Image (cartoon, rainbow, N blue to C red; front, side):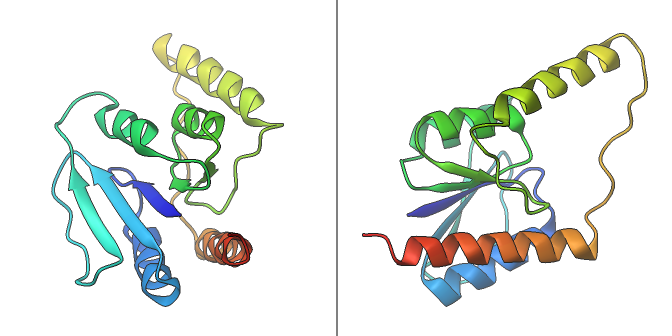
Length: 151
């Protein structure tokens, strides 16, 4: 199993949680971004720089992800795409995307895009809070524990 990280927009505090989990569980973590990223030395974490451009990092992750992998992303279309390939997707606030709600999330995202395109200010998400960090760490640990028992 590999953990893929949509790293361009992933908060540093979430990356730090992933770095510690990678070493602790000996799980490969690959950060994909359109700019070079610093990662701690070791064999379990690496950074992959893709060319700049719209959705290049997302497209790379979607092309490389395998069934059973985990993708860390707040990008709902990317989450839906990797889930179709049998991977799981977890957002940086600790929410594991689910098959029964991803369509609804895509529809809401598209609706909000339409509002923004028409000039309505919708605001962005709030900053990552301590409870978000804890929820992410708990969800990640839970996922890794579940995977540990699988062949």
